[in-house]
Picture 1 (cartoon, rainbow over the protein chains, first blue to last red):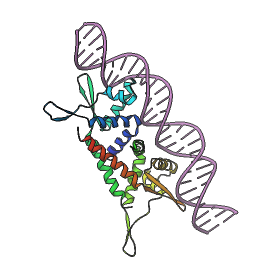
Picture 2 (picture 1 turned 60 degrees about the vertical axis):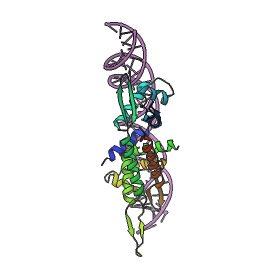
Picture 3 (picture 1 turned 90 degrees about the horizontal axis):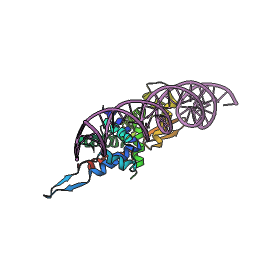
Picture 4 (picture 1 turned 45 degrees about the horizontal axis):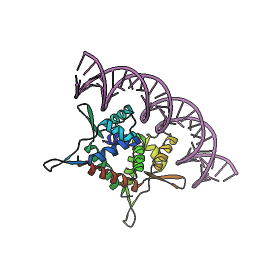
Length: 113
Length: 113
DNA sequence: AGGTCGTTTCTATAATTCTAGAAATGTATG
DNA sequence: CATACATTTCTAGAATTATAGAAACGACCT
């Protein structure tokens, strides 16, 4: 099935640096802006540089973060989109949903022991 | 929260061999026996040898499976209990529940983007 | 066009993890 | 008690993965 996919996502999440990246993206995700008309809209995701800054404590090892972002993107967990000069990073909602579904199923299945 | 714990479990699940072990244990978990009185009871978990047999295709690399079982146990995902000459392997229900909860939360959090 | 900035790719090295044989441990059985 | 069996620990080697500097790329600005 998509056990391969689930395993790949788990593997991606298994690295501490990548786990922090995902955590940060989830946090950013919940910040919303209120527009002039009062409408609520979500902010854009952080740039790769902001992720780097936050995760490595303002060190400038961008290549390492770039490597991990690629890994997360390959696993389908994160989408990285070019926005002018910057790269916008976002959690992939569908991927998280898939993980949630998988473990919900596993939970009910493990319930019969 | 137990962010470390979640990451450790994900890491454990990230290895293909361990993913197959967990898959197998989940499958075994759902097999039930009907007792003489008609009552339903779950069967015991498989032994380490049975896990090895199933996962490696009847090869006899028990040391490798033992290594992975230890890894899964350290991550809290599996419990391995001595039963006479054998070791009985079981999925840890609480661990699976924790993962489910974590990703359910992440799912709702990612929902606001 | 030239320069700066954000990011990726390339490269080499360091670190971690996986694998499996061999020996060791513990447990039942003859 | 000796033997067979199930599993673990020890060991070394293979394979994978992470790290970070350097160079390269592309986009913006003047």
